[in-house]
Image 1: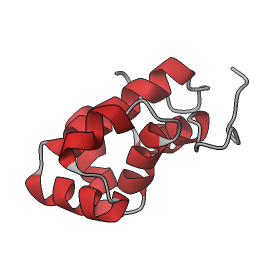
Image 2: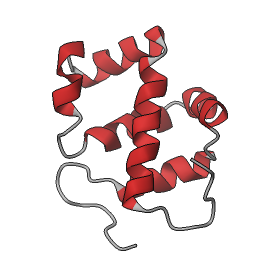
Image 3: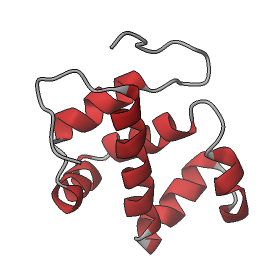
Image 4: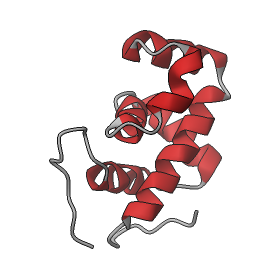
Length: 102
């Protein structure tokens, strides 16, 4: 996905960013282990969890919480770190408190 810094991120683009982040995390055994430990999700539950409100936001929270991980993801994916934060703001947290306007 091309960077969209200083532009409003759509919900679709935010989800695509989070899915890319999940792929990035899953491709690194150490990161994936840390993600699973922090979230308490069993690897066999990821597919089901991905459909739950807040899961994709949680993936971005995980990436954003550790600057070296954020910077590695940004470099690997071509996303600007600010766009990752903008994407996070567009996703639900499981309690419907998120930015809904486009």
